[in-house]
Image 1 (cartoon, rainbow, N blue to C red):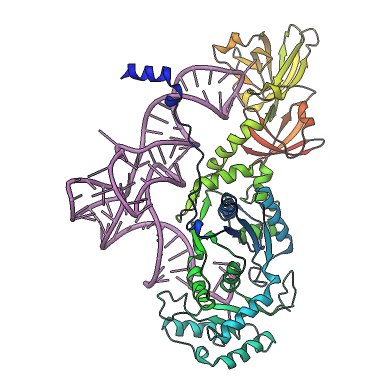
Image 2: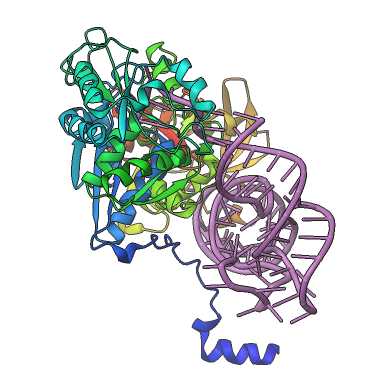
Length: 517
RNA sequence: GCUCCGGUAGUAUAGUCCGGUCAAGUAUGCCGGCCUCUCGAGUCGGCGACCCGGGUCCAAAUCCCGGCCGGAGCACCA
C-alpha cells in the first residue's frame, strides 16, 4: 500500500495533492432558463445607512445578475413619509455603499416618483371589483376578518367604489378614515393575508415627504408598490428576507387579477453577527443621541463603519456567497469575517512597526553604527524596504529606543531579546518607566535556536505619534515608525504583531482604525 | 394563540429533491508539529456534527409519522 502510494506520488504528484478547497459557487437560480434575461433588484427604504444585515440581499441579487449576464436594479422604497420616514442623505449613502461593495446598478427607480402609476393600477383593480375602499376602523376590520367575514365596504358596487377612491385622492378623507384593500380569499388560513391594505392616507402637510413634500396624500403600502413594480420592472427573481414570505402570498392575489405571473422568489433567513448592532432604528437613534460618533462608528455593523475599519468589500462578498441563500437564520461571528478579510489583506498590506504605550529602552555598549533594512512585506521583497540607522552616542555608546509596554513587562534582568532585523540585547535593569539593556550580539542565528522574543523598536527621536481607534471605539496611543509619514489615507497596512489597520489621517499624528489581528 | 419555514461539529456550509459510493466533505475555530527575523501568512497532523423517538426498507443524514427546539409573519412599516 505504502509502496503503491510512493509510486503514484512519484509519477503523478498532482493527483496526490490535496485538492485545494475550490471556490464555492452559488447554486443555480430556479427556472433560470425560463427567462431570456435575469433581472434582480435590491430595494431598500432610504431611512438609514446600509449595514451587514442587507449584505445578503445586495450581494446575492447582484451576483446572480452578473452570473447570468442579467440586470441589477436599485429601487428606493420610500413610500412611508410618516413612520419609516426616508431621509435625503440616505439615498446617496446607499448608492455609495453599493458602489463600494462593487455592485453596479444597471437601473435605478425611486417609488416616490411613481405614485401616478400606482394610482392607475389601483383604479383598474377597483373598477374590476378586485379592490375596494374600506372605511372601517382597523380594529373593526380585524374583528370581521378574523371571523372570515366580509366587511360592509367590500360589496359596495364598483361605481360607488370609484367615487370613494376619488374622494380619497381629493382629500375627502383624513388619515385613517379610508384605505384601499385588495380582495383575497377570506378563507385564507392566514388572517394576515385576508383583504390586505394597499394604499392609505398620510397627512403630508404634517409629515411631508423629503422628496415630494405634500404633493400626495394617498400613499401605497409595500405590497401594492413593490408588487406592481416587480412586474413592471421585469423582475424575474426576487431575493429577500423570509419576513417577506407572506407578502408573496398576498401579492399573488393581485398578480392573478392583473393576469401576471409572480417572479421566482427566494426567501433567505436573518443574518446576525454576534456582538454587532444591526438594528436600523437603534443605529439611527444612537447616532442621533450621540451614543456613536457617527454612522461609521467602529462599534456599528454599517458598511460605512466596516469600510473605515479596513474591512474589504471582497471579504464581505466572499462571506455572503459562502453563506448562500438558505432560509435558516445564520449567526456569524466577527472572527469569521476577519478571516476572510485577513486572507485578502495579508497579501496586499505593507508591514510597519508600531509600539503601543511606549516605554523607553536604553541599550548600552552598541559597538558600531547599524543600518536596518526592513522589508515592507515578508514574502514580497519587490515591494521595497524601510531603512533606519542607529548610532551609538556618548561614553557608554548608548542608543535609546521605544518599545511597547507589553514587551517591556516581560523583560527581566539577564533575559535576551532581539530587536527585529537589528541586534540582540540582554536586559540589565528595569524601572517603571524605562528599561536598560546592553548589546548582546548582532546575528539572528545566535538567538534563533533559543527562540528569543523578537520585538518591534523605534529609535527615540524618530517616532511618529499614532492613535489607533479600536473596534470598541477606545483609543490606543503609541508610536509608529517614521516611514509611516509617507502613508496615504485609506491605505491598509499591518502593524506587525499588532494587527491590520486602515490609515484614516496623516498629519501631526497618524490616526488609524484597527481592523483585526 | 393562529399561519408558514427550518433543525449536519463552537460558527457557517456541502450532501437531503432522485435512500447505498457519507462510520459524513470544506471553511473558520481550537490543540500540536514544521516553516518564517511579526503573536500574521504558509504547511502538516489532530479535535469536533447528521435534534429526539418510532416506522418503511437488505440499506436512512436523506423517505413517512409523532415530539422537541429555533426562526419568521399575524401593521393604515418596509
